[in-house]
Amino acid sequence: MYDLSPIAKSYVAKHIAAMRNPFTLLMSAVCIYAFLSLAPAAPGQTTDPAAKLQALSQELKLTPQQKMQMLPILKEEGPKLEAIKNNPSLPPMQKMEQLRAIHNESAPQFQKILSPVQYQQLQAIRQQEIQQAIARKRAGG
Image 1 (cartoon, helix red, strand yellow):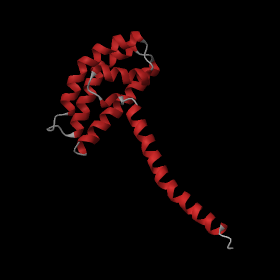
Image 2: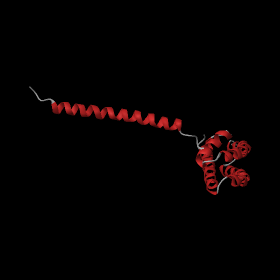
Image 3: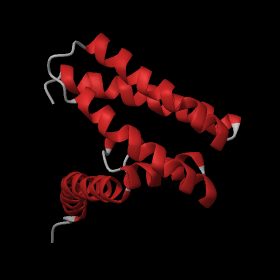
Image 4: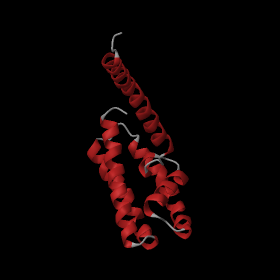
């Protein structure tokens, strides 16, 4: 009789290692898909004022009263922002200036509604939104 245990152990170890890579890859893909499908949209990635408000509400931890006060402002500025973002004739620097001008128009209203910390967070979100919009247009998207 031959002792095949070292060979069998080697085969089993190779088989397990070979199965781990595809299994790990598959599980990683499933986790990434679940995260992307369940994660809320970033505030600047939506044109719908209600959806944008919902995303901002989560990030800024808005009260129901703050949400009600912010929705009309977002509805008013939304079409203006989209027109600038989608204007192919504007160079990126001009777009950034015009987006900031619209944000500056509504800034006093938001300062009255939000706490100082929330307002600072909103400013950071809006700056990021401007940079992402310009980056997408530069990339051809």
